[in-house]
Image (cartoon, rainbow, N blue to C red; front, side, top):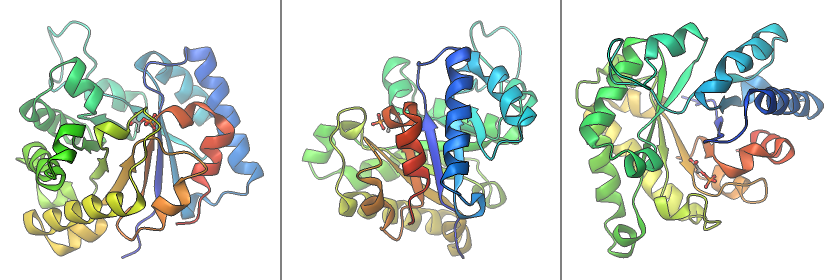
Length: 258
Ligand code: PEP
């Protein structure tokens, strides 16, 4: 089964809503100029919560070929959770995707696998596609435990996920040592772990599900290195941080032929 490549731009805590609208418009225009075929590659932006309403207005109003989502969600649906944002709220804003378990949230907010699993469930309850982030730190990589570590995070997040739900899942393999450091995993490193992720999905669910799920690579992806990564058979796209803030480079990334 052919999987549609997915390029997702994680803006992290950058850009206010004016700046966010401007970036989305530039990206959409760049894609148009490059004659990007949306059927050949899906483009997603992941702005901060405060930008989502404005991004919704411009994407829907101008019918842009860009989808959007959030960088996190609450495991709860409503109530006394000050500062949190629910899946229902994101769905009402037209979000398609939500990032779950990004390494920066695991580190800054002490998110455990249990919390990540509860967020995956919350995403599915509200018809949002989780972009589940997994990946090892430098110590684990140096110890040669990167595959085991990443698969354990995957297992930890997928408890309670049904085969039907798993079909739509997106997994992002993001080695922590490659995020925002300029240190990119080699295409072979990315392929090794992305293939292992797909293998585990086949064991947990079915070969069918494993073939349907998109597995992304994330970690210092740029226009200049994306082609070699996308040439790997088990890499179906990229989760892009820094380079997604540069419209020209992000368009280059989105337009790569895998
Ligand atoms: C990320 O934020 O998920 C990421 C991969 O960042 P960067 O591309 O900047 O390494």
